[in-house]
Amino acid sequence: MAKNEAVKRALTYCSWPMVFFGGLVGAYFAFTSQHPITGFLAVYAGALMTLFLLERYIPYDTQWLEPDGETVNSIAHTLLTKGLVQLAALASVIFPMLTAGFLQPLAAMKFDLWPSGLPLIVQVVLAVAIAEFGLYWAHRIAHERVFFWRFHALHHSVVRLWVVNTGRFHVADSLFKIALSQIPLYLMGAPLHVFWWLAAVTAFIGILTHCNVDMKTGPLDYVFSTPRLHRWHHSKELPEGNTNYGENLVVFDQLFGSYFNPDRPSSTNIGIKGEIAKGFLPQLFQPFTKDGVRQIIGRSTKDN
Image (cartoon, rainbow, N blue to C red; front, side):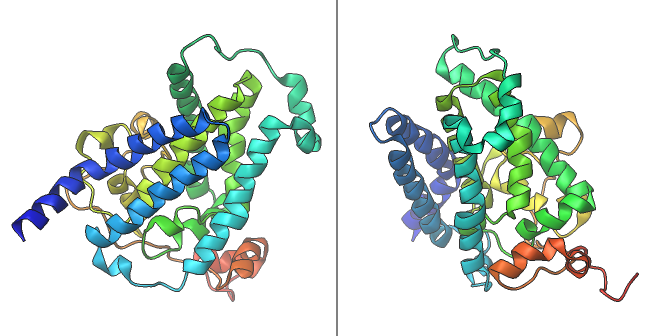
């Protein structure tokens, strides 16, 4: 028993760096192989499985292990909305003509400003920082403006956090975030492999922030978006929930006053005050109807 508890305690401290840095090492071998995308998907699947098992061995909240009826919808949103949007964004980098109607005006504006001569790791850090600025403001705007919250609320409607609902985003929400974070890199002339690494960092941070694993992240909380910080962000209480907007880093939360990390266990009272439709397709269409928006923001459909 004592040995088992010692293993659990050790895992609470090492599981975050193990998954994140281990994932990046795996991504390196994938991206330098003959099949980079297939290789990365295999690494990502391994990270997902690792967190899935850790959720059952050292869960942050045992009640979050219980089904919430949204697993199928969350998987569908991950694969059919966020996943397809990410693939479209990647395609727009590789084959601009595939999305000529949208990117043709941007192609004429593309500037050769990217510091391609710098070491790759420096380019990746730079790309993550530039993209994070757009991600931060896209996320903050989505919380502070009802027009955008109508789409983002889908992500916050879950009552438990675990790896499966990491990609539970409305397609409009995903497009908005990609526009603000990746178009600046495209205009600067960032090469394809930099976009790959940005996607890898975001993918591993994403599953880590949403996992139901008891992780002690300590100093990492001041640099990265961690599970501890992100659970506060999902809190039902607005003063707690409207904080920690960073997707990968929390530097802009610290700069713009939205960093929240009190000295107590992070919230498990998560969700929204409003109501999200049941079922995958109704959830996609709900933000486009007047009654649907009223339901999302928690206002009676009988109100004027």
